[in-house]
Amino acid sequence: MFKATAVSIFTILLLFPALLSGQNLLNEPESVVYDSLYNRYLVSNWGDGNIIEIDMDGNQAVFCTLTGSSLAGLHIDGEILFAAANDGVNPGLTGINLHTGEIIKVIYFAGQRTINGIVTDTSGYLYITEWENYMIFKVDFEAGTYTTFVDTDLGEPNGMYFDAPNNRILVTSWLSDGQPIKAVSLEDSTVSTVVATGIVSLDGLTRDPFGNCYFSSWATNSVHGYDSNFTGPPEVISSGHTSPADIFYDKFHHVIAVPNFNADRLDLINPHLSISSDQRWGIAPFEIQFDATSRLSADAWKWHFGDGDSAMTQSPSHTYEEPGIYDVTLDIAVGDETVSLTENEYIYIVADTLSASEVTGEPGEQIEVIITAKNTIPLNYIKIPVEYGGSMAITLDSFSTAGCRTDHFENKTETDSDPVYRRATYLLRNVSAAIPDLEPGFGPVLKLYFTIDPAAVAGQTAPITLDGYSSNLPRFKGMPNYLLIDYIPGTLSGTVSLPFLCGDADGGGTINLLDITYLINYLYKAGPEPESLIAADVNGSGSVNLLDITYLLGYLYKGGPAPACN
Image 1 (cartoon, helix red, strand yellow):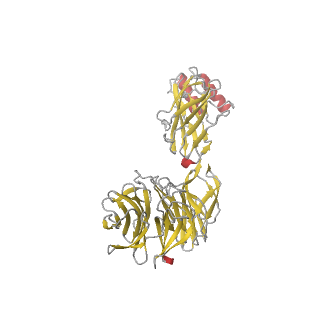
Image 2 (tube, helix red, strand yellow):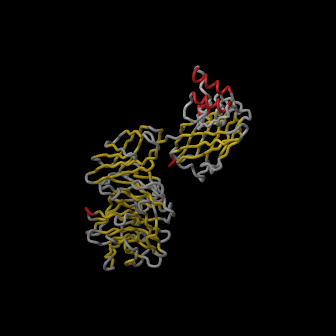
Image 3 (cartoon, helix red, strand yellow):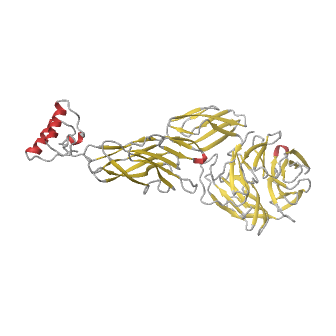
């Protein structure tokens, strides 16, 4: 066996898309079963008498209510859900229509204190533990009768499992010496010890189709397991639970469902498979080496990497070409069974950018430059270095996040300012977990306000670069699912410039004979290219040629039309 970490149904499901329901209805959840007829989990609440249904997206609803009851064990036989109801309006073994949620019948046990685990044998008899009275009752539900099947040597019997091949019931004992798993023969009701676990406060008990046995312990907050021969000592299958109660093996999805009594949570764990990788994130394209461990003897392996590609080996490598957040699934074949493990949002591949806008303005005017971020993952930290050199002098006045995707961030500061070398650095970050991260997407994250030098002339520019200076480099950080991702994004520069003056071929700021001379030198004497080819294309034809010279001559000296650049 191997250790697996507990995974909450409200955070991530091993086999299905994880969607948090609108409201958590679990209240001291005690027992859980999987209902294959309606593809849902049913969970009993000790705290309020409700049975909660949870669909495969994690959405919750109240299936039925046993008013005033403290509900313990659940069991499905055919189309009936059986619940162990303690106290309340009508306590006892309660049969419920699995389709409608209506109560069919209640059987009360004389002197009942705390009934709990429920199983059915091959003859249709039900067995239910009486925790405080150290008993197991045998029930003919259709007839509405019961007998005391065992009333000794059980030590607060708790969870049960029907071991059909051996015609016996396996039972956990909360307080017995040695903390054993016991067996009750269905032939003569004799009790024997299967194995002494050495672990206290045992609750739930279940088995998988491969013969392995699992039990939960409140003392260790773990699920432990034995192989089919109960070879000891028991191994930790999953940890990190909170008062794990009556566990259930879902053979349809090959997971163990674990109600967390004191955490109001349902965990799903895969006891057979674990996935690992040398990296969990990278910058596209990025190669990752995967590996898997199986407690079962796998006949075949198949990986699904979440990007449409797959592999058929236990330890494949895979290159992610595109940015994204990827689920990874591993299927193994074990005889006629397929066992699967899905790690949702397991791989994070980024190819993110910071970019500055292209802005034009007039001499002396204040202009706004927008810094835009494209991010693949949620971010709580964005560092933006800005340099604003070039031939046109501009002055950095202020910054803002108003109307930006980051306006809700709690810290927005200028961490460095150097007007001599015309550069500055800005840090946008969240410290408190209560402040939402920047969701994946594209859009403005910062606005910078500059004033253009009143003496600026057409043709001058001030590039806005974001690739960093000195020790100030652009940086994105996020921690999706507690995985720290820290990287330098790509950058795209912007520009601040003055609008070109159509016909001002030499960039002098006016249209005169010098522009005609400039064009003649450029076209026929290998002179320099105009500052702006658009400004030099005075007739708007799409090219600079002799006709533009003629056009300027007509405009300046013969009353011709004004320049008409496109």
